[in-house]
Picture 1 (tube, rainbow, N blue to C red):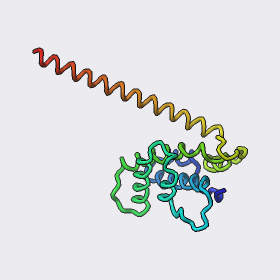
Picture 2 (picture 1 turned 90 degrees about the vertical axis):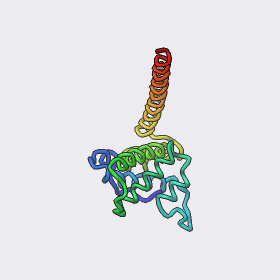
Picture 3 (picture 1 turned 180 degrees about the vertical axis):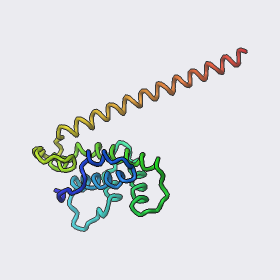
Picture 4 (picture 1 turned 30 degrees about the vertical axis):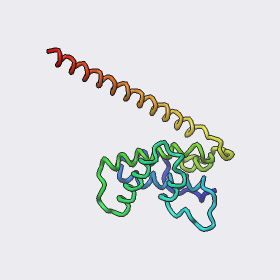
Length: 171
């Protein structure tokens, strides 16, 4: 079991207007969740978030975006100045998605701490808890719908382009 979570809850982080402030806070939540599902290591092999992201890479719907988000997080906290506003927004979204990818694997008391509740009963390992699990499932369905829509739009644009070329050849 992970140590008690003392950071901000997900709803508090979501209400922060500046994505540059949200990114490190989301990273903290993600690290807490990943540590809670990692086996204890006597040699402390899992030093930081980067190591945890490698070990749990299979849990993320888009591991590459999470790695990129971690790079942006490091850029922010070390004040390197190489990242931009668009990087911060993408990193914030990637960390948020990563959190929702990991939440179904966590015990409900761990998720309750992160969500800001303390009255959710403890789940057995692998058992999903209600609110976050249903939100994660809805988010996945919405993502699938968005991808299908994007494919339909891309095919429509391609067909329109083919039509215009055909009209050009005809003229």
